[in-house]
Amino acid sequence: MIPSINPSESPPFQRLDEYTFQNLCCELHARQPEIATCDVYGTRGQKQRGIDLLAHRRGSMEKEVGQCERFDGFPPAEIRKASEEFLEHLEYWQQQRVKRFILFVACDLDRTQQQDEICKQREHFAKYGVEYEAWSASTLRLKLAPHRDIVERHIPTPYWVENICGSELHSSLVPTGEPTETQSLLRTMAFVGSQVERLASGLSRGIAEKLEEIRESYREGRVREAYIYLQKLREEHYWDILEQALRGRILRTLGVYVLNIEGDVSKACALADEARTINPTADDTILRTLLRYHIEGAESALLEIGIEDSLEAFNLN
Image (cartoon, rainbow, N blue to C red; front, side):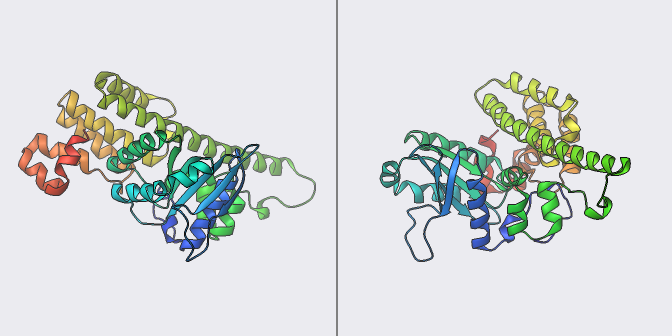
């Protein structure tokens, strides 16, 4: 895979070929602590009943399944389609005691439309007693971090191995033989550095999950509670070690809340600029459109977002 100019961006898993991505997901699923084995389900031309991977849980007859989607961009319609392909065979999989469905997606799923669709699918699957999860590119990176061997096997590019798993101390820096004080210090520094990277990734993942809960609180009317939480989060001592994409997302969300609660356009503009500096390639359509709405009016805002998407976008906020 070609390295990105911004190392904080998620790895471009969509550049892997179809079978490499599928095998990577299969091995990663097999490494989850509750899983005994995981295998690719079916070969080309065989009916796969809406799945690509079949995993068996440890110490029980329960199973998990996975579907692998290697696309550059995965809109809500495709998320629904993937779910429907599995649900067409729901009766069969219920008989097989399938308890979790994982949608492995090669790209990020940061857009509010994607996140909302995932929430809908989680609720829908829960009615049938099946857990639903969507593992985006950013989730795959976090889960692959401890598994350097899997990454090296399927992505033989040193840049991406280090980007996903953290750096290893190069053998040339530490000669063989009895360790000196300098060598011991280098090993310690390398170990500490790798642990900090993993801790930061784990913290970012937890904050990202909490962010979705806060957004849901906002939608349910607990507006002030959500607003205060995001303000405090930005002031936390660990703010600077959160992943850049997550910090940008928090700032954009906070900018929307500032407009809706305070109507402070200048403050929202400052948040938008800060988010763009941290994560310049992220989609900031919603905040940009709302700013234009407050500054220039509804007609101008519709031109910003496009007529076909305007109603859905405004309803999301």
